[in-house]
Image 1 (cartoon, rainbow, N blue to C red):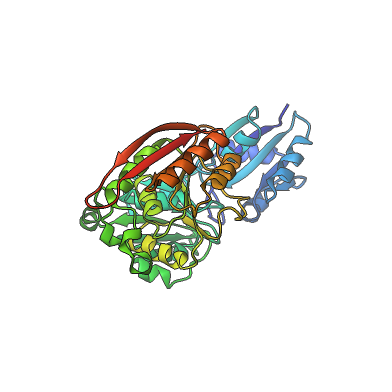
Image 2: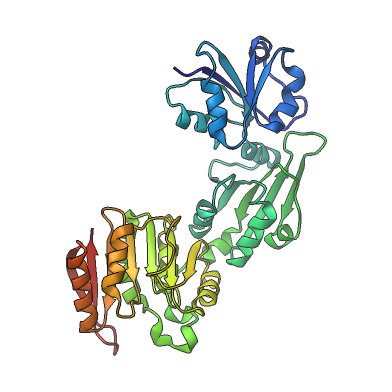
Length: 402
């Protein structure tokens, strides 16, 4: 049995107001919990014999202390804003799904910022970067969300966010940054361009709203299939780029709309990785290239075309340390150096069930190697697609599933 929990949402106000019902709960409570900042705010209101359980990482230690209590105890937890909005109540429900929880929410910080600005927020896309990677923020930018609310932390600060936006060309947003919202002595709200925000330092806690210029947003619509000439080629060799029609057919064969982690092996100019990232921004994209010059090329093309979040690794795929990478359920092999059978053997060890591997085979030798690798390592070959574009050599888009 889990203890009972009452979670009370608070703002950053140094003297918070609580309705009479909540005041009575606090007066009658004995076991309290929350972050260090929460404790500094509510400490004067707690009973003299109160016990405080700090909420800090590692959280397993916090929940161990909760579970050591007698199940008849009620733990009163103070949390920021609305505890169900990327908040502690979500963590509690995940860790202790059977726990009895009662909530007294406050406005979350993004609501408060919108209220201060008198800005409707029913159309706001919400992203949390608090202890989270860039993935969902990048996705919101790529999908051209007109209004984005962002929860920050000490790493993903407003200036760091603004620099990332500038790096990838998302400069048509205005940033509204709120600092110490709810604290009358320290609250500050700033309206900034990405360039202005990138050069400022902001006090924590803070958050921000990004609002796009509608005309510039409309003008930023990408064509279906990035033009080949938009990519900087490897050593000036334009023939090394996977051509746009073939690129789109390859992505169709990969069925990326239903997959979550995509590996591009032998990315060269990065054209397939970048097209995949832009067309399917929910994906985790990891790209491999053995040529050292590929790193700068991927970075330049990804920034120029607005595709943040691609993890590019420069190494021999067969010897690269794959620990810690998201296991793939879709793989494109753009280059294999004659070691296709070995590559497919290694992929068999790392791929998720239901995944697929796609190869664009130009030579008969590559076709034979792909079929051999599929047969040897337990893949199921799917029907190939024979494609010819202009004067280029015919290509077979080959696919195997696992």
